Length: 222
Image (cartoon, rainbow, N blue to C red):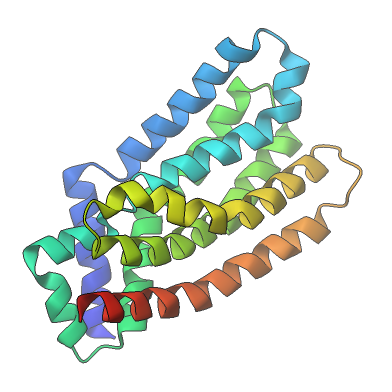
């Protein structure tokens, strides 16, 4: 447990030090949200209607920015070999690194979403619903992303393939995240149903993601 805690703190400090986690993700998130009104025009009702989808798509794309560095940096400096040979279970190591990635990339997106929701003319209920769904759903994006990151780390120019590998896995999370946010904003479906499914997807990804990523790392590094 001590080694996993040290690994978590190390990854968080590295992400904060290089400035490529929270800052880059939030700026990319902000760029998508601010450019959308220019593309759609000054239709406030249209922005309010599709606002949750815009925020979710922005958060999804922003969360992919730093995924290619999840294992690549350790692979380049040789730390990944030490991790594979260490006594700590590789699945728990992957889970700890994914948690560090979410704390430095996913959580800042959740915090920034209420402010960006105002730009899209969302009301208070819709803003709260989007923030709640992102808080629950972004960990699923990260833990599913570990599978693609693990597969890409052993491939030449694997970072280019990472979005292709990860995006299909995130479609269910995107669908139910947007559905729950729209339901809270006045849709015909109850908020509880899609939100519960979103929670289930996140729990499943937290369990399945580290095991699949660990298996990919073992197979790729042999």
